[in-house]
Length: 176
Image (cartoon, rainbow, N blue to C red; front, side):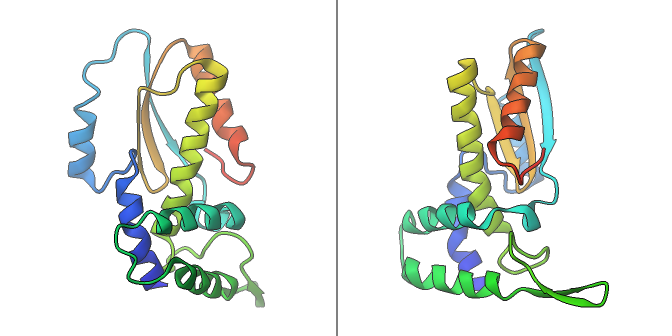
């Protein structure tokens, strides 16, 4: 789990929306400058991201991320197999009964943050492409720390609410 998570790190850190920590966030927030009257500062939080990540789509995002690594010390297919082994064998107990997690990953798993972030990188690309297609625009600023999003929308309140609707519709398992 730790090996796969480490190999995903390079791609996650290259995501346009990536925020490393508070200092990095504050530096990036300076790009926003003063908001005009027709701009909306917004935040979003993905509800229970780790257990809600859709496995098939996360696998596609993970494979893409791993294929784009500059150094492939461990072959992508080997890492995909290791990830599958970890994800398919997450056992937990709930109300005295044993279960195996079928979607997402366990909160606190070593294969968690970068796995979820690889998926979220693809999710946000799709959201912004759909906003461009349907609304003719996307947020002028969009940054993310794992499941916490901050952005700036330029336009009317109605356009912004349509954008939020696009976020909700993009993936049925992901709620903002």
